[in-house]
Length: 204
Image (cartoon, rainbow, N blue to C red; front, side, top):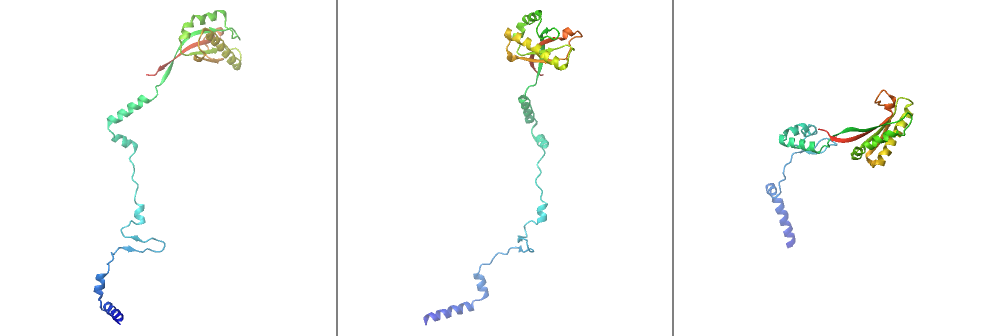
């Protein structure tokens, strides 16, 4: 009996509670500005950027390299350029000096008797040289192919003679050029081998 009285009392309390009292008891939710767009679109807030506004946003443009360089202090730029010049490889030029010329007979690559004496007289300069270029030549008789081979054979003959004097093979370079670079109008003078000293000199 007591239980039924308690239930009736609770029902009567809820029924007689005013709407104002219920509003005070409830938590009032915050009002947000939300709108629903058409189908296949998202629900976005009013404060968000529209797609059109987003496309108008531009990426920041970086300053060109020339403008950046101009903004640097002149002293720093000068020091960097000086450092780059020091680290750059030095240019070198070749300085040549002809030491001896050996002459040959027509169509032969064996030296004449007096030509070996030329090499012997220049032995001190040949031995002291850091690098030697031995190049053979011919006169204008014969074909280009034949004279190219003959020029090489003449240069090789001189190289072997220099080697016998004690000149190291590592500092001798041998080449030949037929029908080229005539030293005189006389054919006998053009049948020759030139031994040249090569020096490397730094460019100013």
